[in-house]
Each structure stands twice: as structure tokens, then as C-alpha cells.
Image 1 (tube, rainbow, N blue to C red):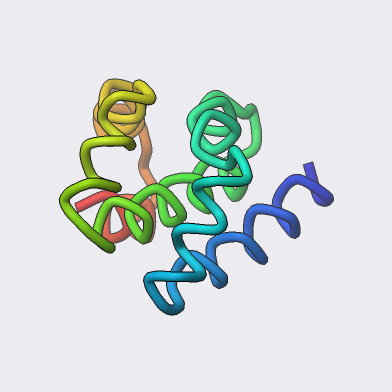
Image 2 (cartoon, rainbow, N blue to C red; image 1 turned 135 degrees about the vertical axis):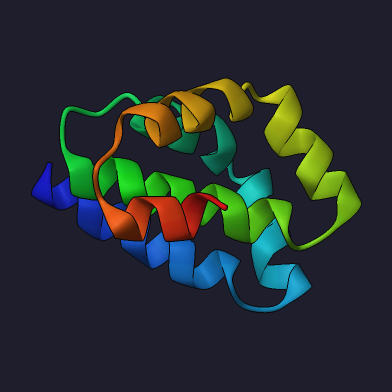
Length: 93
């Protein structure tokens, strides 16, 4: 989990950069991995995946649609209904 968290953290930061940087993260196949990480047993990994997906979805309508098409919405909704972490709620909404 520590390595997953650190890798997700790096990609989250890259995806929060320019549109070009976000595009590269998406084109390199990060979306399905972030969606998969939403199911991690580690709270910090799940939260980082939520943050990354939010950064990607917030970049453009096209990327928002890709996040939705990748199946990212339902797991985020599930996390919102079960997480007790305030930071998770803040990053998910």
C-alpha cells in the first residue's frame, strides 16, 4: 500500500498540472488503475485515487466523460457513503 500511495500521489500531482500533463496521465492508462485503487483496503490509497480522478475529471468535459466511462462514479459514491474521513468527503465532492 505504501508504494501504491506514493505512485498515486505522484500521478495525482502531475494530473493537477497543465492540460497537457493531465492528458499524458490519461493516455498512459492511469484511469482504470485509479478506478481499481478505489477498492484498495488502504484508506489513504483510496483517497488518493479519488483525488486523482477529480483532478482528471475537472480538467475538461472530455476527461470528465472518460472518468465516468471508466466506471469511476459508482465506487466514489460507495466511498462517500462508507468513509468516515472528512478529507475523503472534501476530495470527493
